[in-house]
Length: 278
Image (tube, rainbow, N blue to C red; front, side, top):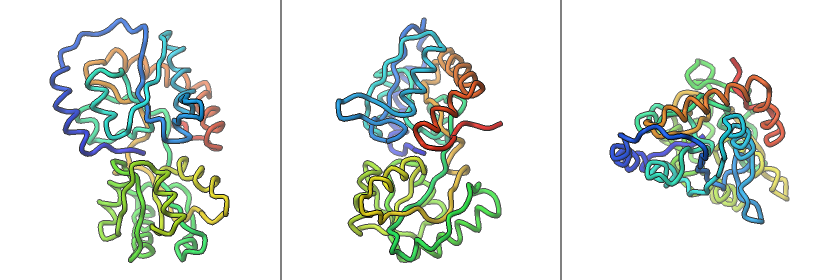
């Protein structure tokens, strides 16, 4: 669940310059994605973009009767590149947040994934019981955060830079030592090497790190958290002037959710259902 910080200011300035664009006749839609955030989106050994969002995006484009092209873009520059016209939409596990809404429009959410934590199985942290999904704005969620703060006291947590998880740590666990990384995989490497005590990220992105740990030393622990600063779910980010494209995507997402396509694809890629439930 990602969150742009520095890029927002740049994107806002560029958005002003593009604010008067006319509606387009959408026959081809270019979609920006990081290509380094499995299983949402990742570049395979052949250089091809694959993952849940690639499959879902192609499905949405078919419903919209447009040609779909994915463009790889580093996360830190993903919003400015949209505003500069490099592509028409962002589909890259981007969480819908109030901060982002200041400069972007969002489609309706196509999925939601809790933020979770991993650690070494020999760590005392591993004894902190896993929970069901908790809303951090509820009493149960707040208690889980208090318990987490106590467990992480004196520890260092790895997190990908410019993400909702970093915003969560800064707001709710300000006393905890944090180490940031450009990619979540690098945080997982440092966890395995003992340079951090835990890593926080989207559950769906942490599970592959656990599976890829050949020694079986990495485990999930503690609460699974959603909402609040962690956002409203994942949606496509769009330029504010492209209301017609937003309407097209909203209709396609609603159809793909209703007929079970989102559920099917999420189970295929994640092993569980991240579709939005009404």
